[in-house]
Image 1 (cartoon, rainbow, N blue to C red):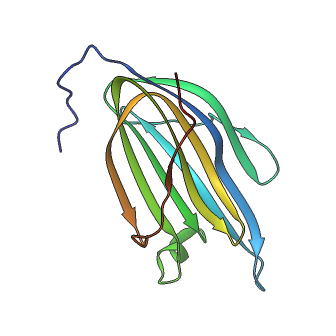
Image 2: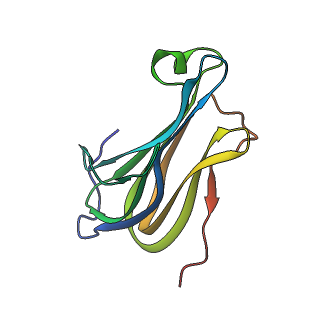
Image 3: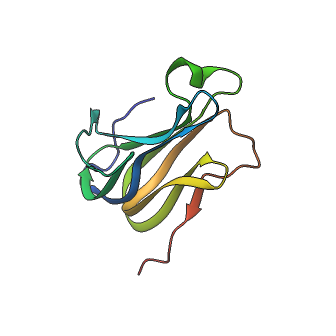
Length: 148
């Protein structure tokens, strides 16, 4: 897959609001269950973009990108246990710059009654969605509020 763009004059812009990381101790062994999102912009992993608040990392920032912005999300137990049969779920959403304004909400099931949510708003198009260990019935992208 080529990451070169046809129209290089368009610069994408997104505002991320919500959780980058949420964790909680569960079960008899008191293991952490995590849900998190990682952000990759034009081949660079964006670090230290959120604020740490008691077992979670919250983000509310705007970013510009030229080629692509990739949001990778995982939920489940940490480490290789997340790869086992009862392990976690993975998603990957690739965004391309656009002149149209959009707003979506990415939602990962975190625990029985809670989700990890990340709101993405700005000038972008969704180019590619990859899901690992998701049922076809389960949704993780929801439309945001109508943006004028």
